[in-house]
Image (cartoon, rainbow, N blue to C red; front, side):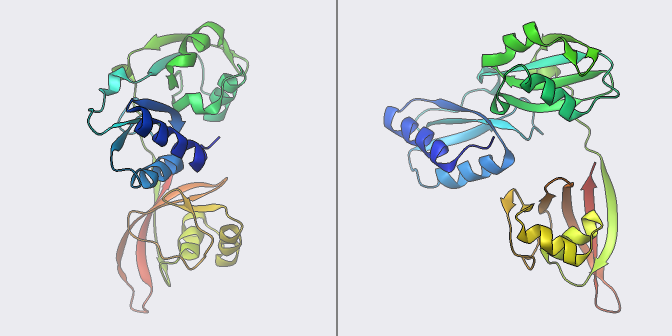
Length: 246
């Protein structure tokens, strides 16, 4: 569940008033962006994000007065857990579902890095011991669960398909149609329905102009990155490179 803007603002005001550090639970990329915008309203506090490893997406925020320094990442209230077992037939969703099935809230769980025979999970310290004691199965597979150091996390290998194609314009509907193999009409419908995000902000206008480096998400279909404009064809179409994340 995403944090509300009001909840993030309340935490920031608490830090400002009490002049003490405060941590959030795990924030989505969308909420991290919201918090960064919110922080521009405050002159006397800072924030940083910690997810257990550099490429983590879900991170906790450390909000602190400017007269203090940010804490070392290893002092943040997060832990790493490794699950061993035959996970080859299980998905990321299966792992998350088993954890949430223990009664744990989503915002206490960070990134889940799943492989064939093991899985590393970043969690809040509040629930680390509870998972170690109570998680014995994922789906029908029995698993072994134990604690590891944050620097032992096996970072995920980012995999993607390269898509090289041409579009008439760098509109959101054109990029979504090309990246997700949809018609422009269908792409436009999904955008207007609020299912598309650019850099973790919902966009409702099919004509919204995309820039190189933008991350485009389509709910239920995944994520693409508009990598670059390569050139133009003789007929005036724009030749582009898209990365479709697996």
